[in-house]
Length: 164
Image (tube, rainbow, N blue to C red):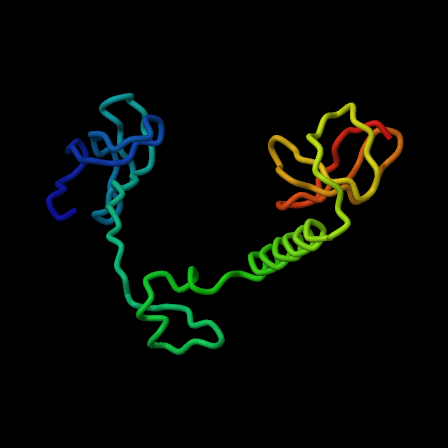
């Protein structure tokens, strides 16, 4: 601002109406500081807003250290959060593992009948094994009257239509 001489001089500023950095004419100064400008593009008179400067990202090396790790490991990893899953991710993984185990147990049952191709019009009973075009092999967990059945597939329990 040392090169600013006074009202009437041109200056770059952020225009509140144009939402852009444009040429402005100084309208008022207070104590040597620009306080009011007029936009050369749209003609609006407003407070002086200096153009935003680009912020340069600086990696200061500060890393959050999780329990069970030491400072050297945290600094060595590029993304410390990727190494340790969050609680919700851990719960989701545990739930998926439980569903997978239940499915494996149901499929390895020696008395399991042969899989039938699933159709909405087929009658189902608890314990039946079906083969779905999208979900794969599944076993009927329960029948919900009048026309639905809960079937355990490898990726979880699905409620599908059937004749009960």
